[in-house]
Image (cartoon, rainbow, N blue to C red; front, side, top):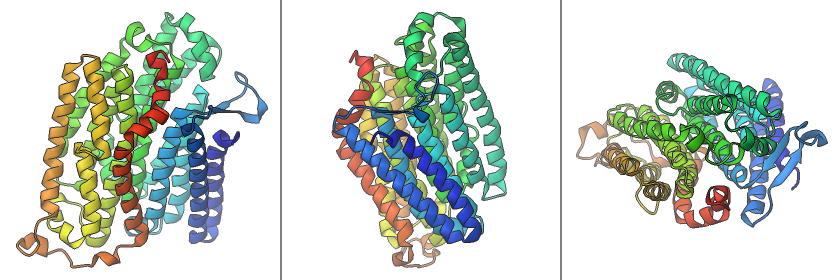
Length: 497
């Protein structure tokens, strides 16, 4: 148990290396090796989550027995346990889903995809577990470089979109690193816990204030927060379904996690609200992004592009919750990290199943598909209702906490933005629901779809879709347990706990 914080990223890094070497000999061996590493890491993550859920103390591990500030510390606390469990749960399901999907959309390149997918998971979990600001940057770049390789394997427009993402991501990473350098020269340490003890006396320093701006701005770029989102629609649209199903649910959320970690556990209370008004700026930018993404999603004809613009708006919810700077808003933001990971992962994987069965990605071509693929589109219906925020799906409860947080902060404009965006989401998702459940016997366009029976959908693909659909419902029904067992502990410093 004491070694869980370091075992999680280490097992994934080793699995990526072994998978690459095994894949050179046999493609199936490469996949099997990677899957074993991912499943083992999921088990470690859930073991640690249960420990924290039952009231256990955070687990700290000093790498090589070098105590901080000299050595690098890994920390498995409530926030890390929450994030790592989300990443590994979604990552494992996508891994099971991926072989048939990639064989269709990126034939011949699957062998390179497996170690890259594992490296993405290693980087993301490492970001959540490290207690060192520079080490967080290292894991951030590991995840980013692996993601670039994954997103480009489709070739063509996907490679061009990924190159744009690489350039923007390099700027974001550079901003974050500049901020880390300013903090190190000001405080003389990179350990988050020690930094938190030193910064109250240094909070008036221009270097520390500049560090806060650079770090949050860099992470906002990585998070694709409006107006830094412009790489995201093309990347998600042209990526293979399995790759988008991994990157969209978890990649941007971990950058949001890093912002939350800085706010709660590194910089002193009030630094981002009174010292520099960064959270107010973050809130207004997020509010515009929510409306922008929701409005542009309405006009899209490509299913994947609609989901991409929807993600721009959904990421704004997380930024808005953080900007409220109160426990209710932060709980809403953290719940939305979980809920959006499940909802958007589900919707992208559904798109991959439809593409496998019919070859279609344009929304008008989805007419009548629900009656020919009832189980798949039943899962889509759950995801769509959750995105709109219909109870008892998960999406309703994160929006509810965000509304409570906005009311508590007396931010009535933000309150109205959340309501308006839900109505806008209803427009494009209810439009799709009406379309997919049309009667094919009375709709000539729907009759053109090849009558392939639902039973021919591979179990390896429909299984993860079904599990995510159930997870969307369970996360909604269990929201009180999740908040009381984990998230109340995360936001306790904000409430003076």
